[in-house]
Image (cartoon, rainbow, N blue to C red):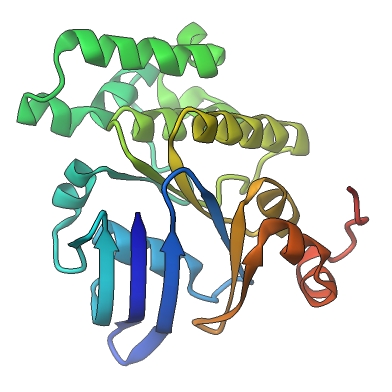
Length: 244
């Protein structure tokens, strides 16, 4: 579904990503782990069209997208849950969700009925959002805000969901809930590409994973093999007990 070939991305004279090759198959959860500053977020920004590659190719469903503007990429079926959620705090939960479907309203490819059905689906997977639908997004807890950010991205009807650090700043029990929901979404046919600092949680649900170090892919393998990899455990799990 997604194929990245020899991708270089930089800001000014600083090269952040060097020769990246990554593929994501339909229906997979693929995770990218790496320490802060390894280029994980830049990679997602390049896929979304926010950061421009200097060289390399990004193909989505056999279509080159590396030169397309972000709104065209959303329309093709890639939706991103940004780092730090980036909700519209003064707007209600419902208004934030409706904004997620903006390009569908504009293109006329989302009838009121299908948009209402998608809203119902999001309320089913995140019941708390239904309870709080008239509340301003800025008044929600961190976990609720993350649920809303995922819900808003799903309202765009994506084929692939990009998630940038979904566990950031959340309590372990909330992280568990959110990752269970991500597995559920995959079972419903969504493809997920996940950038995550909590390597243990991310690899636990991933079919495959890539380790990014200093802007290069240092390692790629199945989620399970990376979980069992001594080097990965030493660097990324820190004090975590090995739990299977």
